[in-house]
Length: 115
Length: 116
Image (cartoon, rainbow over all chains, first blue to last red):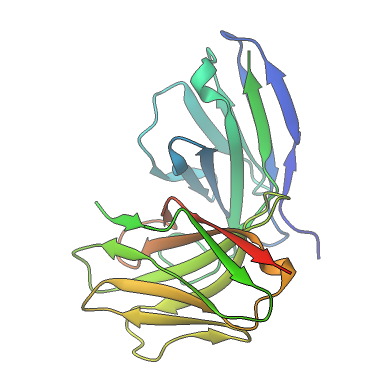
């Protein structure tokens, strides 16, 4: 069974540009969450999607957005990139929706560097 | 808001010996889940062990066990018979059982080094 797949693995963008990251959850999983990992702030929750709807959102500016498709694949977008957006972005998928007692499986992440 | 604190930025252990990683958390809830995740150099987060707050019995997974002290809001991880492959960053994480969502709140992490 394939795990959580994140693409691309590495990305270099220029300040002011926008970027889209993709996450394909484990087959059958319907919940997808996104996290930002930086040396200074650690792991921070961005948002969670279930059944194509955003169910929960972390404390990030509106430049960070996401969506989920009918096949449960999710994308996150960051507009007007800033140097501080450089981070490892991790995606996690779960079998059931919010509030359920199911394990979150993580992908290998996308390393975004903003120059 | 819930917070998770890992007070040990770095720990070292000799191969085959035992090490304990500390974690404390702050919450006003009574129903929640606690996790330990391992992040090796590959950067993929791997679940090591989980504990449901309503269970008094400490969780165990092979060489990994926890000491869950609900009143003290403490959740430490004990690794027995440490192996070179255990070297990684370890994160303690909290998830509410009441709030809507699967949001995980992570501690800052502890780097574990295993000496041969």
